[in-house]
Length: 371
Image 1 (cartoon, rainbow, N blue to C red):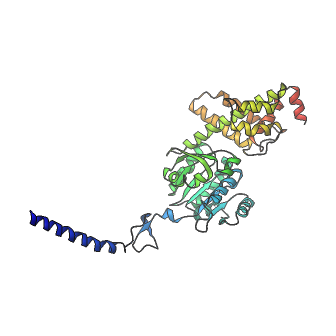
Image 2 (cartoon, helix red, strand yellow):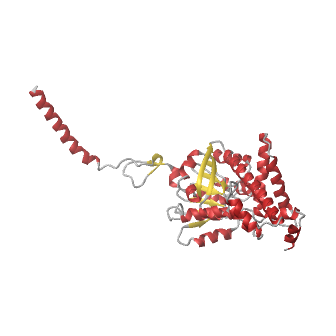
Image 3 (cartoon, rainbow, N blue to C red):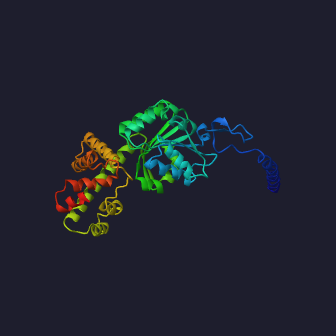
């Protein structure tokens, strides 16, 4: 037994000595790159390692520098998601002056303005887009120099507009047919939340794209991001439910506020009372004081709010859902939008309050219309 014990000690000593000699030599050879994939060799590696071609495209694109897009693109810059020489923000807008204004706002950031939407997509791995109407989205997406023209393998499109479900599904199919990836990501929120990074993203489509940007781009622009389904359309469904409810709430609030004024109650006091009970809403506290003084500077234009409510009513009809309360609110917004005397279609959706007073016959409402 003593013999075998001595032999075991000698054997273990030899193993330890050999391992001690080998390990330092191993450290001279680089480990495989953590991003190794089939694709292009990584230049700095001393071994033939590869990276995903998508990861090479570090530029971030943004199409649509409007009421919402201006704040969203600014957040990508201010939060460091894009705007460095290595990862510039590449932008395009139908009105070029808005691109110039954004670039001037961030003189220390790398912002590249392209003459077409196609060139933005071609230059970037991920491109965000938010256009104001379904008509504008269709033109910019399908045009000869539009979004789709720039799509190819490795390109990802994140569309943040509120469109019809069929519109989103059409764009998704077209992008995927050209080898790209598509994420439907309509936002809940208006101009203020867009500027402060407090939007809520309602997403469906490519879960891979969602996972890649949820902690970077989406986190910079929003306070929450939700993924519903890999089937495109569910994000739009969620957004239409939210916006139709929001419009209906504001219409009801407007009627309650108009009634308060008309029966001699202090509207400011009533806003305070409403804000202290179970029916309180940040929207009431934000919009109420402005509605009283006819301040309807657009954060969410009435015509866009009505468009969403109209789409939601159509969705409810298709789904066979009783939606009469929402439908009445949609009719009120439609009447306000089409009123040629009021001309409030481009004002904030709180301007529906002016239509409420116009249709009211009491003395207070008549007097208010003359002010």
